[in-house]
Amino acid sequence: MKARVLVTLKSAVLDPQGKAIEGALRSLGVPGVSSVRQGKVFDIELDTSDPAKAEATLKDACEKLLANTVIETYRIELVD
Amino acid sequence: MKSAVLVFPGSNREGDVARALHMVSGVKPAMVWHADTALPQGTDLVVLPGGFSYGDYLRCGAIAARAPIMEAVRAHAARGGLVLGICNGFQILCESGLLPGVLVRNARLRFICREALLKVERNDTPFTRRYARGAIVRYPVAHGEGNYTADAATLKRLEEDGRVLFRYVMPDGHRDDAQVLNGAANSIAGIVSEKLNVLGLMPHPENHVDPLVGPTDGRALFESIVGALEKA
Image 1 (spheres, rainbow over the protein chains, first blue to last red):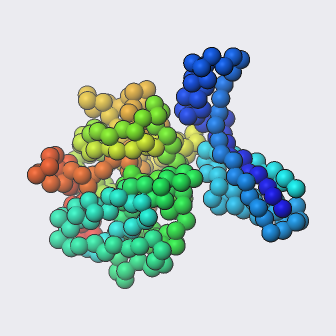
Image 2: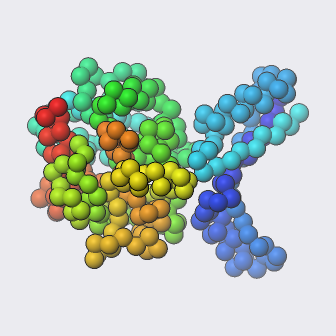
Image 3: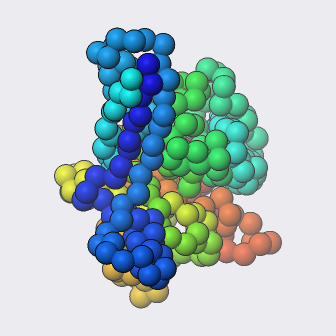
């Protein structure tokens, strides 16, 4: 089964990279962008086809390595 | 004194810190590969050097913090053994949970490579006993992700327990959190663990040990460690 994990900075954490991207979009004249926050996407293939098992594995992966929960939050999406 | 310098793929300051340790203690440190699972018998001090372990992939220090040798470092720290993490080593210590908080991208997104002024907040630790309390010292910094941050409760605890050992200061010796070079919370440059045996700091004391190349403000940090271990 395939899954996507999204890791983003917690809303209280400053995101200087997001701010720089936001500024760049503004200077390019892209209209209507009020703010940008950036993060990471992990596309992961798993051996299992059991959604509960997949979820548990991915949660473990996030807590152990993919996210630093001091500053980041993660979201798990099972694709199929 | 028996010291061990860890070497991760992408470490690049292990030579400098090994040289500083040799110079000050008279003993060459053991260089220990990240994939090893044990420290040399009788290791007193473990050093995590600066560099770009694993190319800073994922997050700075994230993958190194999960390297096989880190279990042994954790056990060494739990026994009260001394651990010193400099720059990327500090990032690794935070990622491994040996120190709280995290180092994020510098507030103004620039890699900063210059000398920084630091205040030594206390001198009753194994790392700073040869400094005067409140001494202002010059160590170089070279980092892109040195902006220390932690949640409000952690910062409060660090301050209350006096665990901020080094702070960036302005030329007049006072801290200015709004102007701090990398955006670090409370101008924090280095912190110690609860038992004062694990130090992580962003600036490089090992660069300033030889009068041939400039100031020697960093020497006292290594002399402090040697002295603390002799006393023990």
